Image (cartoon, rainbow, N blue to C red):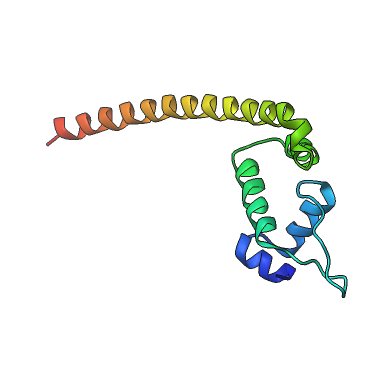
Length: 120
């Protein structure tokens, strides 16, 4: 599929797709005989995975490092696992922090509901 179709399917803009490729967040996309980018199904799956990493806060330098090494997964598997594990730990810490914030907010809701109930 051409870049506009890939943009529609991925939810990213054409500009963002070009930026991702230029900055090394995705591997180089092959081009057709006319020189237009030609996205394949596995390119779209890769874009979704990069979006997952980016949306969950993985630093761009880590995504670039991961992308650089994924083509040689047979020799770089340990580094790839290390990058993903570090990100997983960051996410788990963020989830725990968010749970703590939710508990604080829930306590305040209960507090205000008690005030409302006392005035009825």
